[in-house]
Image 1 (cartoon, helix red, strand yellow):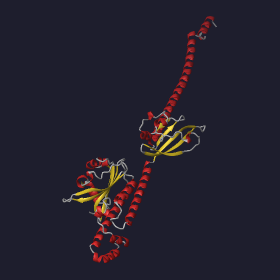
Image 2: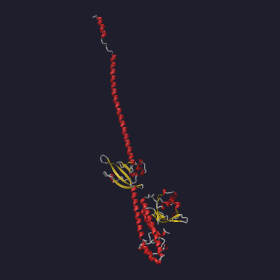
Image 3: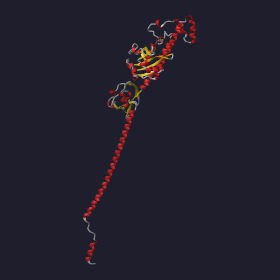
Image 4: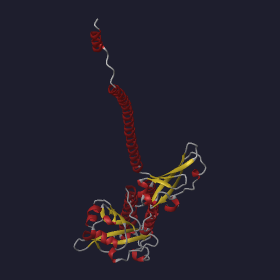
Length: 420
């Protein structure tokens, strides 16, 4: 083979020498590819981390929302509790109070938090030296107190930590004013009924109206039993124009309460002018009662002149005719009149009306006996047979024929004064 040709063939088919730039480019590409791969891995890790952070943030936010919701629910529930609640910390200072407590005390929460209860509360309303605070026993202790005109039972509950050590206290005040007032009202009702029974018993033992039971004694017993300021009895009369006029005939007053018996306002009261609603109600046997501030202006002006804050008025009937009324006043508080007391006083007015009616009958019988001397014995037998008087009563009537003028002026009896 031709050497020249061989050399040419050799040159055409030999592998060329690698170029240095190509080699560098490949290395850079590989390096860049490696960097890109590492960068992608790091980016993936960062993305996962960010996702995790975002998820944790969302979870934390959700937890915060749940905690905030639970806190709001707890706070709303805490403030919705009608009982008064005060929480003390381990140092026996006020840590939290509910809305009912603030309303009763009349203070803002910021004025109480961090202070000892003895600094801001009446000692009867705060008993932080109570035994259950100190001895560490798990128990509830109770006591009763009064505050701002209300009555409460107080329960003391120690708060224990994980080590069974006292870490604070919960004090709960339950308002029992309604129960106390109801018991007090029922007690007064029973006392009023007892006073009526005593009065009735004395009335029945009286043999004649002239020696009968005086109204002053009856209303004195009633007033003391009901714990009121004044009890008074009024008699109705009519003038020539058939106008109903009312006069105070009897009055009992509590100690230090000024008597109004000589007050001109208590006599010749034009009921239709000042108390038109009274006339309509009392005629029908209905009672009038309430706080004076809630009464019509004409009535309010009348009562304001002698300091009455609440009143109860019950009608008196004699032989089914409305002849007057009994008025029961309270000058110190706005007394809430409840049915048991109202009914008890109406019972007293009915007894009084029956006694007046009895007095009228006895007065008429005395007049009949007095004016029928020849037939006195026969008339007496008729009275006994008809059961108008007992033998004892009849004997006393026959013995005593005195008139009202023969009696001392202090002896003004029901049958005489309210039937003239």
